[in-house]
Amino acid sequence: MSSKSHSWMAFVPVTLVSILFISQIIVGICLLSGVSQIGILAYLGSGLYVFSGLVFGWLPVFEFRKKGAVRRGKSYISTTQLVDTGIYSIVRHPQYVTFILWTIAGMLLFQHWIVVLLGVPIVPLTLH
Image (tube, rainbow, N blue to C red; front, side, top):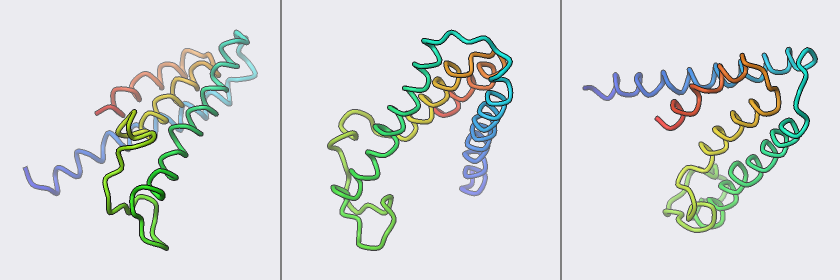
């Protein structure tokens, strides 16, 4: 298989996950006012958004800058050294974990079957 077709095959799941995730949020916001919610689940979903965003979303930025030997003026992802401490000692791809947790948080927050239906394929596609 050529590298060109391989990159195309990697593009499909990423695009599908992005479309599903954005759709989940838009549909959830549109349906939010018409759904009776279980309050504790909505609070849990909101907390999961914040917690996962701060811990698994932002910590990698600081870890890469601090331990990844990023040159001044370069993006945090331009590391020149393997980072295996901090959040990276727990999970290799923390921002993927954030994406999965945000998907679950959306299901808890919006509590509608359409949002769940849009969210379920995101988890295995992100893992892929």
